[in-house]
Image (tube, rainbow over all chains, first blue to last red; front, side, top):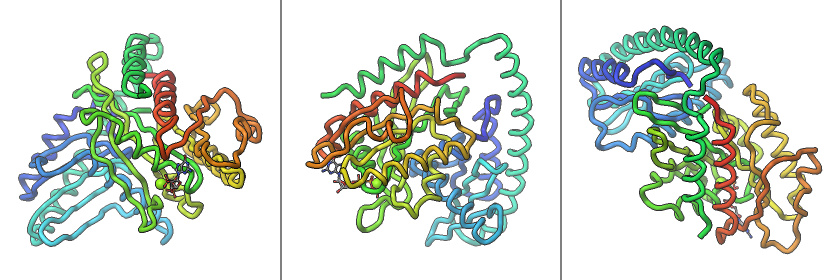
Length: 168
Length: 193
Ligand SMILES: Nc1nc2c(ncn2[C@@H]2O[C@H](COP(=O)(O)OP(=O)(O)OP(=O)(O)O)[C@@H](O)[C@H]2O)c(=O)[nH]1
Ligand SMILES: [Mg+2]
C-alpha cells in the first residue's frame, strides 16, 4: 500500500483536481497497488471507480511482469488510446497508480507534462507523510494502543459477517 | 494489511480464492455474488477465456456495512488455477488479508491440490508473509463426486493443522456461504492495527 495514513484523501484530490484543470482532462484517480481507489477528481459520474481500480492495478502488475521479461524493472507509463477517450497511467513510487482520462488525443503532450509534475508532487507528499506515520505507529506500539482493531470493533464485524453469510 | 482510509473512514480487506485449475473458485465467487443482497455487493468482473477458464481474475466488492464508524469492505478475488498462469496468480495474491483454498475433491486431483498448496505457501513466503499464521481456510469442493479424497488428507500430506476446513458443492451452493463466513471471520480475528 502506498497511500499511507496521514496522507489525506482531500489533499490528493486537490492535487489531482489541479492536474485535470491544467491539462483539460476528464477524470483523475489515484489507485493503490491493492486495487483500491484512494482519491478521485473531475467527473467520475460515468465511471465505476471500484472496478476501474481493480482492473488498472491488475493491468499495471501484469505490465511489470512483461517489463521484467524484456529486462526492465517496470514501464513507468501506460498509455491507452481509444476512439474518443484515452487513458494515461503513471506509476507513483512503485506502488500507486495515477490515472488520467482525457478526450482529444492532441492533448497528450499537456497531459504527459502535467502528469509528470503531479506525480512528483504526490511522491513527495507520500514520502514525507510516510516518515511521520512510521514515527506515530512506533509511538502507538510503545503505548500498546489498537487504533481500529479493538475487541468492540471485532465483535461487531463478526456479528455482521454471521448475518450476511448466514446459510439460507 | 487492509487498506485504510482514515479520512473517509473506510477499511478494505482483500480475500483471495486460490487453488488448482477447475477446482471451483469462480463458481464459489459467482454463487456468493448472486446470494448477496444488492446493497451488499458491487458489480462482478470476470476476466476469462472463451472456455470460461479464469485468465486473470474474477472480482467483486462486498460491503459489510458501517462498523464503529468505519465502512468495512471485502474485495473478493479469484486467481487463475491453470499451472502456466503462475505470474498472474502471484500478482493477485499480493496484499491478500486472507485466502480460501478451494481444493478439488476428485480422487484423481490429489497431486494438483498439493502442488497448488505448496505454490501458495511459496508465494506467501516470497511476500514475506508467514503462511503458518496467515488466515487460510481450506474448502474441500466437489463433494458430490463419486470418488473422493478423504477429508483431512491434504492437511495430513502437508503436515498442517488448525486450519478451518469446510466441505462444499459449489455448483449448488452447499457449503459456499459457510466457507466465506469462516474465512472472513478469520481475517477479522487476525486483523491488527
Ligand atoms: N461436480 C461438481 N462440479 C463443480 C463443482 N464446483 C465447480 N464445478 C465445475 O467445475 C468446473 C470448473 O469450475 P470453475 O469455478 O470455473 O473453476 P475454477 O477453479 O475457477 O477454474 P480456473 O479458473 O481455470 O482456475 C465447472 O464446470 C463447474 O461447473 C462441484 O462442487 N461439483
Ligand atoms: Mg476461475
